[in-house]
Structures are given as structure tokens and as C-alpha cells.
Image (cartoon, rainbow, N blue to C red):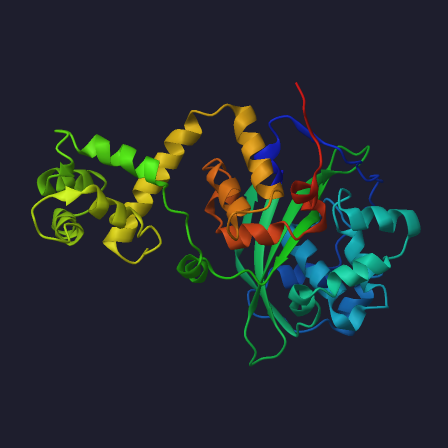
Length: 361
């Protein structure tokens, strides 16, 4: 199950038809791709032997995820366009992918598939002259994740390419084989994204509710001692908690008012500071508590509408979807911008373009 579809598998049916799935061809993996998959050094463009092997390359139970990725990279390389490369790539694409359905009907790659590959963010996937493996293959319940990097020349910048493969059963054999479910190109690093992507601060009613819980004597202010105890209980060193209390009490009167506390919570995106870390912990905690009180139906509806409706600010839909991901779902670790790139894939379009949703038993 892909990281996106895992969000909505609690019994929701979209109004969409499923593409036809046909029996894949079974073959032994070409020796050249087996060797490439085991080598950690950067690899150059396809050789004549590599390109010739594409004519018979097809999914097979013996192929490991890296061998499938290596085959795809060679098939998509610009040198193999028009010589069977795109057809070879389509043989390795999951039967549920819309372009695979077109290929099954005609036996050739479609003009729409060629246009899809000409998207600006896919350029590096076709124009590479070197690629490398970045990390080991991660296997999770019938899915495989492999990260690679590509570049156009020896002195060019590396571009990240992440591959999602799923295990598909070979009809009538009882065996399964790896096929490509999705490819994500040029995703920014998490550190880079964290510095530029905002998290929406709590609304004023939410801030007042938290303030009231800390204002235990109902005096209209929080004592520095009480505030330090709360901050320290969240895992901050006591010295840091005391410094944060002093910085929050901006007028230095020995009490933290709602205005001062609210100003602290507004720093939710200052992640390199203690104030930002505290604000993010409180914000996440408030939202997690509110989320826990919702029914599965409410959660699914909220996520789908956030992805579909006009957003109140950029990446709102992706932010909401990530918030409701299970901690064990790899999507929970993504940034909103990275998550949003998944929605550009054609087979995820239904998540943002649906008109009706029907809940099933």
C-alpha cells in the first residue's frame, strides 16, 4: 500500500474505474543489471550491452528492487528513447498505473506518457550521465523504497530520485515480483524544507484554553516557577526552561500574561530556538488531542476535503494529511512540500480532483 493511499483505506470508495491488469511476462534478470545493483560506486550511462538487454527485460520474481530500478534508469535514459527504452520502462510499471493500462492496450508507449516524462521536474531522470545508490533498500509490508541520485555530468549537482516499488503477484504462479509504483524526482532535503515551510499557529481560542490550564490560581497570569516546571516536564533542561521563562516575561514584572504567552506560541516556526521548539510541542499536542476525539469518518472526510478544497494557505492540504498519518506510516515523516509532490503523480490525481465520495461498510 503506498504512503498516500494508506491515509484513506478505512473504507472509502471514489467514483473512478480501475485500469485493466494483464499477466506480466516472466524472465531471468539480465546479468548486467544484477551486477549494477550490487555496486556502490556511481554508474555511467547505459552501454550498448545495457541498452540491448532492454529488449528482453521484463519483471520477474528473481529480480530484486535495485535491479528493477537499474533497469528503469537505463530504459528512461535519453539514449534509449525510440529504441525500446520507454516500452521496457512501461513493462516494469505497476499494472495499476494509468500509463501501463495504455501500454497494455496498444503495445506502445503513448504520447501522454512521453509528455509526462517531459515535465520539467522529470528532466534529470532522462538526462542523467551518472547515478548512485543512496542508502539501502527499505522493505515494508510488500513495498520497497530505494533512493538514488542522478546528475548530468561529473561536476554537476546530484538530484534526488526516490522509488516506490510494490510486490505484485504473478498470475497463476503463486510467486510475486517487484514493479514500480511511483517515482519522485528532485525532492528537497528535510532540513531545507523545515527552514521555509510554516506550520499554522494555534487559533486564539486554543491558546486561551492552554493558558487557562497553566493559570492554576486564575490570577490572569502564569508564575515563572510554574512555567519553568511545565517547560522542564517537556524534556527541556532546567537552565533552558528558566531562560525561556525570562525571555517570555517581556516586561519583567515576574508574571507571564496571556499576551506574552500568546506571543511565545506564535513562534511555532522558529525551530532553531527553544521558544520555537516549545511552541511546536504545544501546538502538536493540542492538535493531536483534538484529532483523537474525532471518529474515523470525520478524519477521512477532513483529510479528503483538505486535499480537494481551496486551501487557506499553501500546502494546507498536505499539512493536514500528514497530521493524520499513523506514526508507523512513512508519510508521517514527510514535510508538506515533499508530500505535495506525490499529488503530482497521475494515479494520485483522484485525491485532489474527486467530486463524490462514498463510504463503504
